[in-house]
Amino acid sequence: MSKPNVALIGMGLIGSSLGHALKKNDLASHISGYARSAQTREAAMDIGFVDSVHDTPEAACIDADVVFFNTPLSAVKALAEQIIPGLKDNAILTDVGSVKAGVLKDISPLLDKRVHFVPGHPIAGTEESGPTAGFAELFEGRWCILTPDDKTSLIAVEQVSKLWQGMGSEVTFMDAAHHDLVLAITSHLPHLIAFNIVGTAAQLENDTRSEVIKYSASGFRDFTRIAASDPIMWRDIFIENKDAVLEVLGRFSEDLTALQRAIRHSDADYLEEVFTRTRGIRQSVVEAGQDTDAANFGRDE
Amino acid sequence: MSKPNVALIGMGLIGSSLGHALKKNDLASHISGYARSAQTREAAMDIGFVDSVHDTPEAACIDADVVFFNTPLSAVKALAEQIIPGLKDNAILTDVGSVKAGVLKDISPLLDKRVHFVPGHPIAGTEESGPTAGFAELFEGRWCILTPDDKTSLIAVEQVSKLWQGMGSEVTFMDAAHHDLVLAITSHLPHLIAFNIVGTAAQLENDTRSEVIKYSASGFRDFTRIAASDPIMWRDIFIENKDAVLEVLGRFSEDLTALQRAIRHSDADYLEEVFTRTRGIRQSVVEAGQDTDAANFGRDE
Image (tube, rainbow over all chains, first blue to last red; front, side, top):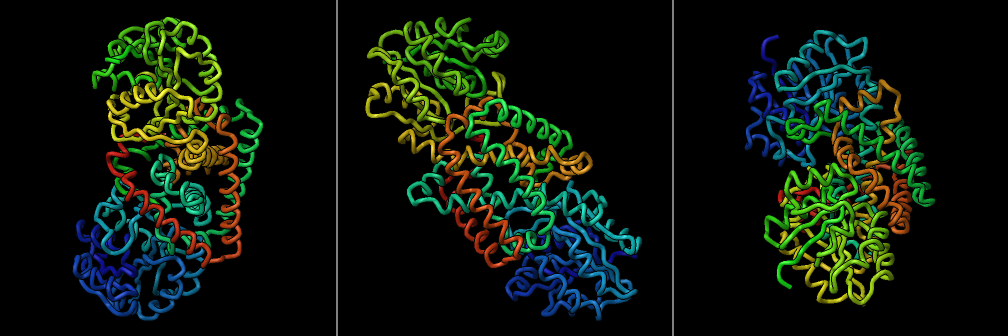
């Protein structure tokens, strides 16, 4: 396939960044866009990260070779049902959602032999949202994890891989369920904890709350940044990845209870042992190149 | 008092930064230093953030007008007992510990009329430790909270305030117990959570753990940074601030259980409501100037 026609379904942070990145790297013949809100469609044309916008998802996809779903997870299935009948032969659907097993299960039965689905997840993002938040470099130097199953067309996988590589990402492959477990601990649980601790602070008595904000120190300040992420996107992630999130949350709570007990009984040795062990993990993350300036350029989800 | 002789008891990140900042701003006549390890004392002289080093805390303090305790909390009481008898008249003791009620209770009975104690806490730090980690700008633009009680000499408070202001800090005052509650939520609980989540990851099966490190995303990556902080310092903080930490941890756990239940029952409305509320707190933190580039220059504890 030469340069494909690409359709962007959803033009928030990720969708708009895809448009910018596809244009910057000259990867698409034509980029069409759909968003539910007319305001977002207008903004997309004004900013210029798409070549055309459309009032319906079907219209945006009619000439598309590759369709990216960049919506909250809960919207993907209904959108796929809407557009699949009108797609060209050999069109490829792909997505950018943070949970993969569910979308694979939802979309697979909708496919006919003419249309392929390649589930994807770029480990990239910021706490900003909306069509004005995107930028072409968001995916550069970041992982994009694809989670095809054994029925997925290898040609389609290759086509999607090339687009991500063209935008500067390193592509890797993982089983969908395993992806969801790994992301539950690296991303979903930390976000849940950040939402929770900031929520706890929000419920403090007025005087104390204003002092918490005034003297907001690290880590609370870091947690407020994480907890400013898109509420709808995260609501969907926790519901879609319920099993893995509840599994790691169970482990987390057991461990926290052990720390709580050690604090109550002034068990200095236990605390020191746990805190010393965690330093080693930090060293591994730095060695894996996941906390360099480049890795921080786009803060990831 | 003209430029005081300052003694630094403990020369890790904070002690060495004090030396650099006092020198840069020309605030001390002489800076003497004590550290338990001969290596640290040698490093301090080599780097040059002190004018002299001494084998015992008593020797370092013999001519001091102001003594800064920059050690883990658990070491302060015994050090104070050692040095107070040999101090000059009107010498001032102060500290930089992250918990204030305990040190005030420990030191007050040791004071005679000749010697003053002004508890202090600069809201500044990084995850680095040791005498090579310090730099002169660590305290610039950051809060320093002093927690004197009604018996503390106002002249001593003013003297300590002037030193912090001279190093670029904004000085504020708080009741010691209230300080400990505010810091429990802004700093101690977030650190405990970060230590815990990284500890939970450390106990995953080998394969999954290496993928967690490889695809380490925000927030996990941010959490590993926080969880790389000094284990001894944090062990002491949790034990010293046990009551406030257990209080906020109780609230945190109740709120987390409610979120867990909402995830289990796919209660989308509840999740969206909580995640939307936390965005507002983020806005307040940004408006309070606590997440500007300047505020991030020194990551704070």
